[in-house]
Each structure stands twice: as structure tokens, then as C-alpha cells.
Length: 72
Image 1 (cartoon, rainbow, N blue to C red):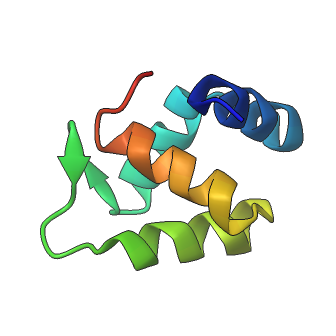
Image 2: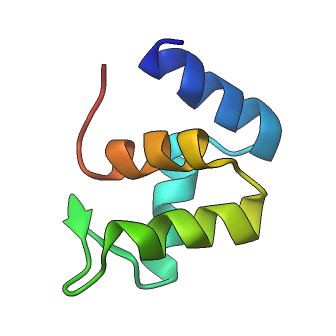
């Protein structure tokens, strides 16, 4: 599955675009600008995505990668 397919599937499942999820992550204190907030680890982000949006690990990791700047 391509990276874009993961992002598309996440949007279908959650009803939120990657940018909308990023805004919610910023509000939750996990993301700051174009990077993770100081001291935040990948596991905190993926655990949040799994619990709040019922994402599986692969889809949560794709959003984490998006938060870190991956676009393709």
C-alpha cells in the first residue's frame, strides 16, 4: 500500500484530513509547528491516534510520518 493510500484510508475512517488531525494533535500538545512538541515520542502520538480515532498501528504510523513532514 502506498503512503497516499494510507492517508486516504485514515481520512475515510476518521472523516478528518491529515491536516485536521495535525491541528487536533497541536491542540493536544503533541505537535508544535512542523515537528513534535518538545519531549513527545512517537509512541505517544500513535497511542493517541489509536485511542482517539481507533486507528491501527500502520495507519497511526502514517499519520505520525505526516506530522514529521513526509508527503510521499
